[in-house]
Amino acid sequence: MGENCLAEMLGRYASLSAAEHSALAALEVNARKYRKGAVLRSERQPADEIFIVTKGWLFCSLLLEDGRRQIIRLNFRGDLLGSDSLAFKDAADAICALTDCEVEVIDRAALSRIFADHPRLGALLFVLQQVDRVMMMDRLASLGRSSAKGRVAALLLWVHGRLKLADPTIDGVFALPLTQEEIGDATGLTAVHVNRTMRALTEQKLIERAGNNTVRLLDIGRLARVAHYVERRESFDTAWLPPAR
Amino acid sequence: MGENCLAEMLGRYASLSAAEHSALAALEVNARKYRKGAVLRSERQPADEIFIVTKGWLFCSLLLEDGRRQIIRLNFRGDLLGSDSLAFKDAADAICALTDCEVEVIDRAALSRIFADHPRLGALLFVLQQVDRVMMMDRLASLGRSSAKGRVAALLLWVHGRLKLADPTIDGVFALPLTQEEIGDATGLTAVHVNRTMRALTEQKLIERAGNNTVRLLDIGRLARVAHYVERRESFDTAWLPPAR
DNA sequence: CGCCCAATTGAGCTTCCTCAAAGCTCGTGG
DNA sequence: CCACGAGCTTTGAGGAAGCTCAATTGGGCG
Image 1 (cartoon, protein in one colour):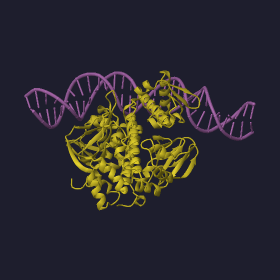
Image 2 (cartoon, chains in turn yellow, green, red, brown; image 1 turned 180 degrees about the horizontal axis):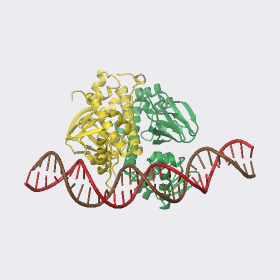
Image 3 (spheres, chains in turn brown, cyan, green, orange; image 1 turned 60 degrees about the horizontal axis):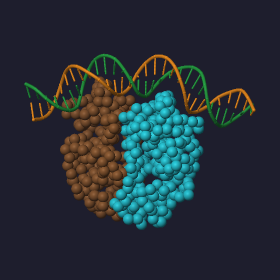
Image 4 (cartoon, protein in one colour; image 1 turned 60 degrees about the vertical axis):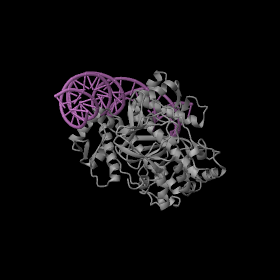
């Protein structure tokens, strides 16, 4: 897809030099496609690949040995996936394709060179992890402290916000390629209760559903209140970064 | 305490050069003490400080506007705290002292120099974030998919494992300086239900409680099964790292 | 047209929550 | 040294949210 997509992501925080651009381009030399439903890797399997999503939706999940599943996060264009393999021998989470998708397999040597030759990019990657951590914190609070309605609303708002990042013209309407079972696995609910919850949201005119999994957020403000959703102002103090090379 | 404690943490993954040691030492030039109960920073306040814990316990939490609270994580010696301020203007989480404690306030310029002059340390810091992310994933699965008993058991096992890192002689017995309300905020339960849950764990001879908040884990294997707890083998492939300087 | 998978709906039940009232413990001041 | 609080823990009773099981409907696809 045109530009290198990690560069696209990091470029939100600082404008990149030509040398930095080409270093990032060197990461993404091994594109791969997966079909909807494909498993990129399973849990507790030896894993060493790291991916960047260029197209489509994926998700990461943990499986409990009794068969219950928790979907940890959804992944979109620009997301780094599987980076836990830098610290663990076996994969912590499974990675699956929600839609047909495309990823770049990261070249580790090139990643190493990024830290070595482009300290500013290394620091930016570190910063990007912070954004991710904050998202996980919000999800943790949602699962721990919100009602079913709040959790589903938060999921919808999160996805909406994420899609809007890539395409600011999206305005409350989007296709959600998740079954109710998967929504349940993401929010810690059962599929049945997701169904009832979404009906309740619909009846309260907070959302509207149409065929093809399309969701329309009718009142984002009220939805945000239900979800305890906080819009976080990213703000980046580029001053502390090492200089570009 | 004696050694620089971030060095202690990173040293678990790779042995550090003298130059690296002194670069890390330059981070920690501003020690600060807090009393039990102190608030290092509140949510949604402008924040720019980053801390490393050298002594004591702290926690990070999110507050919902209805007053409910989610404790995101507990923090121990060696933990990096407040690093979200690298990406956000306002603090995402509040940071509070659970016990009297001591932290080092990180010098940002020195952090920048670490990325610039010691790429291997930059990469190691990145790796350390992965460990943290995996812990958050496990907690997410615990809140989303475990019963009250499982969540409390998971919390105890997690704390135990963390303490054991610092002191391998700890064997199932430790002081837990948390009120039941705080345990509830960490596990997404009410204080009342935490009480009943811990009684149940006690009656099933999984744990034992004594005065002074002391907990004894009586059967770690069975507890781990209840908690769906996974011991993750950290494994670190130092081969990919840039060379030390 | 028939099948399969997802969505929907109903009924009954379990887990966890809320509200309320004691009990305990430990630090403080008299 | 003791009495008194304040805060934490414990226990009870009743209620609500979400779960399980089971049946039915609906839609897309071979």
